[in-house]
Image 1: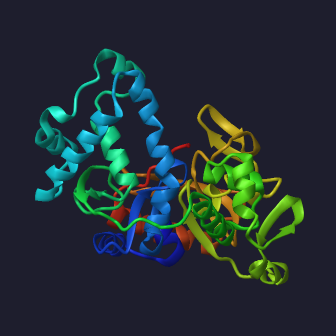
Image 2: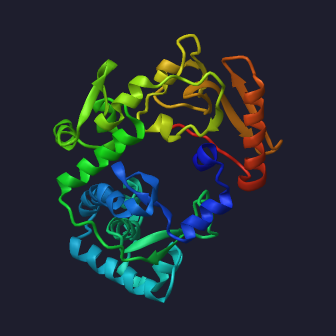
Image 3: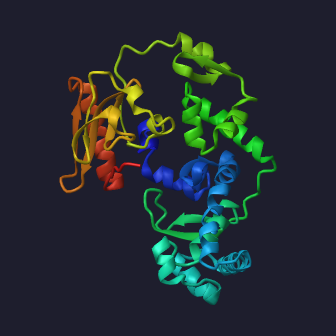
Length: 327
């Protein structure tokens, strides 16, 4: 949805770029998955490396040793030398190297040891997750050997580079917003931005000095520029501050338990309609009717109608559905 909303990129083109490794969905900041360009594959994996190791603490309480996980990682890598496999195929190929953690594991949300090894191998670039049918918007995967060349910089430099990209992507942003996105503590987040040339704007928000003059001189276009974006589009998700994109009078959104004030919800429960950077409405896709259902805070202009029709055709013809969910 984001690629289409930003640049009209088709699903087929996105899938072709995934196949060509021009882009990839990888575990990154906070251990969450993001679609990353090839130039940042290694950086993304380094940002998510620590998160991949967190489950090992729970596994240790269930009797899983580091030696056992190392042996399983080796077994997985050996199995994938013959070609990509889905988790069932890997489990069969590795035999007793992976094991069930019993009722206690089920209670703790850790059924077997295999996901631990897959997570660690992904985070170090030894393997990568490949969509079974080649579609970026599906969630059934195989795993393939990769052996991505690691990034040879310090952990401190990794987060400086993440901070540099973050403020370029979404500045002006606050330190607390960067801290949430990066998953860093207060001290580490401060250290990450210290080498950057950030300038403050109103409301304790910062942006890169190279963008400051352009930001100050920017004037919103007079002509509408409407897009239908996903509820976790980067415009909203990177700062997790949709309230700043809504006029004070435009506050009602459909919540899980009926109408809700936008200021009272952390994340949008619906997809958003954007006009020149401001949220002007909400939308959902009805796959049964193959129609977009939407409501706006403003008059339903011809530009909004055209954007709805354009997005509706994209979903119907290329995706089949466009589900939304709260974080």
